[in-house]
Amino acid sequence: MTDQSHQRIHISAQFSRELEGVRDDVLTMGGTVESQITKALDALLDGNSELAEQVIALDSNVNELERSISDQCMRILALRQPAAGDLRLVLAVIKVTTDLERIGDEAAKMGRQAVLLSEIGVQEKIAAQVRDVAVRSITMVKNALDSFARLEVGDALSVILSDDDTDEAYANAREWLLLFAEENPASLRVAMSYLWILKGLERIGDHAANIAEQVIFLTEGVDVRHLDSQNTRDLLS
Amino acid sequence: MDQQSKNDIALSIRDLSLSYQGNPSALKSISVDIPRHSVTAIIGASGCGKSSLLRCLNRMNDLIDGVQYSGEVLLEEMNVLSAETNVTALRRRVGMVFQRPNPFPKSVFDNVAYGLKLSGVKSQRHREELVEKALRSAALWDEVQYRLDESALQLSQGQQQRLVIARAIALEPDILLLDEPASSLDPISTLRLEELIYELKQTLTIIIVTHNMQQAARVSDFTAFMNQGHLVEFGPTDTIFTRPSMRETEDYITGRYG
Image (cartoon, rainbow over all chains, first blue to last red):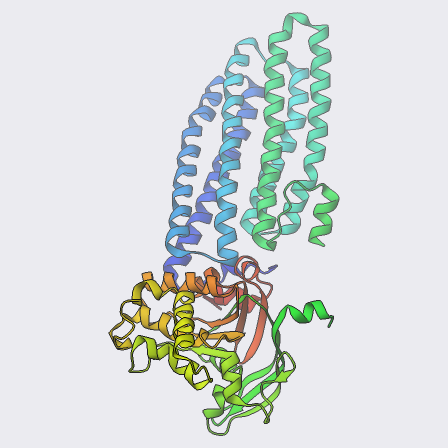
């Protein structure tokens, strides 16, 4: 279905409100997670441990939203027995919230590394490498959430296709960091910390791509998980 | 159509239109092949034509004043709608069960044996065997084997409905038409009936009209969605209920308007 029929009016207004409620909560959770990673990056690059602590604290909000959304989905499945677009929405929401929760975890881990690194001081050259990967990952999350909010298949597809670039940026940054560690053995611990952060950012990109896959499933009824980019394009054309 | 696919089709409906007084277009040019040994559910809002379609398949609509058909309903080589069709013989091959159980005011045994007697099974012993077989197939034997001489009207609604099914399948039809068969049953009887439908499709083809979409989803292999006399969409039930291709279908099964 290319139309956005689940935005159309339900005969049961109560059911409509339940579905809208779940969608709104996913967007709230998405907004929280997005601000978590943006703050985590700022905390890291500015050596701001106070901001990093805020990121860590936000994680419990995200976890609570995940629990509440799962609960709502379970109720809808049990009591409403949704079909077609409604069913796909509920299934997609369950998966999307799992990915959002994991992004939240990655942001919290980044926050903890930022606290440790703030005591050492920011290494400008390394920061530039991290920024490159982080900007890509954060953009992917933002665009994935926008595509969920607007049910834009084209935007979701772009997110999935951009994951290759993020992976490549991660691989380059990692190589650069390994060389840096070899040349500066005294900074091995610092390099390890940044490596953890980079890996986390790369995983955030993967989760964003997963979310975009669910947007495609939700709007088109097509499962594009575990396909390469060409197959994904073919399936949607 | 090659031989293989022909064997997989129990009933072929071709360009079927139906009109009667007060409804000039009850069915509008419907074409669909009903797969053999499977359950096909017909869903749609009241007045969409689903019961009319079902009733074409064993000529029950003949009872309506001013009814007119065009098109074909092919049961193997026989055109069900042809004027030459022996309707009694047709209804033996295409059995039907209605919303409310309608057993005869006779004993449990006689309800099932009645049709057998009419169709020429003369030996009482043979009839007894066939009655037991039909009651077993209808998952009723265990409950009525010591009550065969009791009036069928003593049975519960759920048992009566299975008795009526036993009566229909005793004649070994190719196709069984079920018109809202669970609408007067409680949830447990409904589940028993659904289990029975699953068992029966191993040996015959079932077409069921139901208002209960979850029931259609549970019992059927294929679903036909009808709206205002049109067949909007036909396909495997799991596709219709997870990713229908027509917007009308999506709106109906998700309960939307707009």
